[in-house]
Image (cartoon, rainbow, N blue to C red; front, side):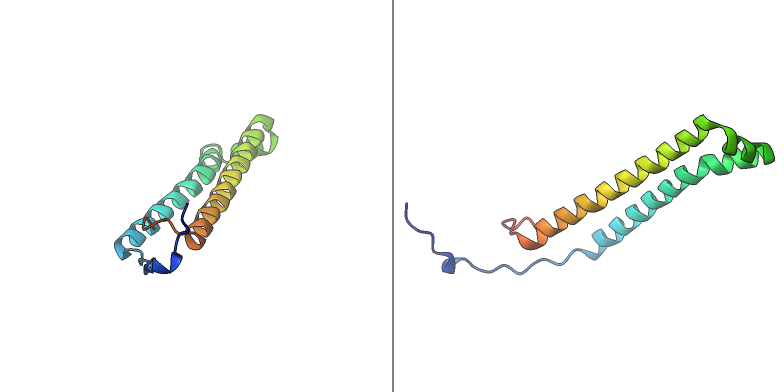
Length: 103
C-alpha cells in the first residue's frame, strides 16, 4: 500500500457556532435547570404549605419520605455529574480530533 501524503491535505477553518443555536441551547439549559429545581423543591414546599407544622413534623419523622427525598437528591446529583463528565468528554473529543468536516 502506498504511503499517504499528508502535506496535500488542505486545512479547514473551524466553524463558529451559530448565535441562534447557542441562544436556543442556553434557553434549553435554563429550562432544564428550572425544572430540576422545581422537582426538587416542589414536593417539600407542597408538603410544608399543605400541612404547616404537621408537614414539618412529618418531614422530620417519616422515614419513607426522608428516604424518597434522599433517593431523589442522590439520583439527580448522579445524573448531573454523569452529564457533566459525558459532555466534557465529548467536548474534548470534538476539540482534539478531526471529524472530517462534521464539526
